[in-house]
Length: 200
Image (tube, rainbow, N blue to C red):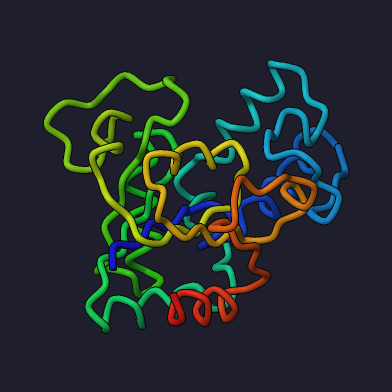
């Protein structure tokens, strides 16, 4: 199987880290459990300047490297790889965050997963001759059987794959999201994702 896994808030606890950063930088206290929006500017009620500062801070290498693993993620991904599945981490992180993101994966025992930075929102200057920066047109040529994703804004990136099974990692900002079809399955932890994928 070809398996797509989102990085932030699927593999690691990004929103919890940003909640701490917003409190530290701006004294804005929005606990993870109360984050109702995937968009961090909306989640924390930030102006444009604050939002830019938050993103800069949150993408510093030492900050990215400090994100906690989502419990069970590494063990399940390694199990899939050992069984011969192809696992690709597809992240919307900026291209410039590739190296610390790759380092995080390596440090957490995921040396054998591929990592791609996908320009999901058209904000990046494409990096030519790179084996990790992915244009949307190239992403749409890729085929996946299963995906693990938390962001409702990313669901559209599976429209070209009618047979894909999308494991929607339950998070506060997607609780009220309407799932686009029966192939989108809400999962509450990595063990439930593992079971669903094994049975798909």
